Image (cartoon, rainbow, N blue to C red):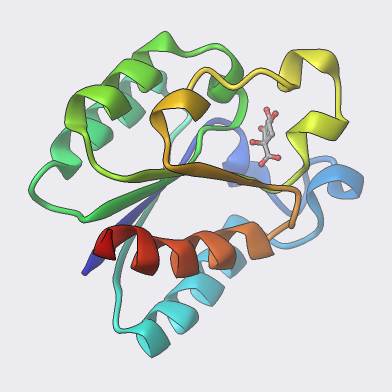
Length: 144
Ligand code: DQA
């Protein structure tokens, strides 16, 4: 089984970016933790980050036939991107939306996710552990 982790804009800055909101764990640390847990679960992981909406759309399209589940932290594009929503919907792979922070406890513009309705579910507010929870959810989502 293969899980594609996609990370959107500014997540390359994790660790230095607003640590009071996002913590001090870097994206490389998160990837390493995900890979450690994935080994235990016998899951293959592809882990990517892009600041470009179009690149994220292309990666979602290319996941068809190559991956079983997509886990996506679309970052700010969560709240703005019809293109990402349409790509997830078009590809039809089970997709899990994740966030480090609890988007529902923050500014009102973050309460709305344009991708939520085309995802299996949302994990939001558990910091770096949101990624591990999503990996674990991927295993059961895939079996359904
Ligand atoms: C985020 C929440 C988004 O609202 C924000 O734009 C991000 C990160 C999170 O992981 O908490 O960049 O997706």
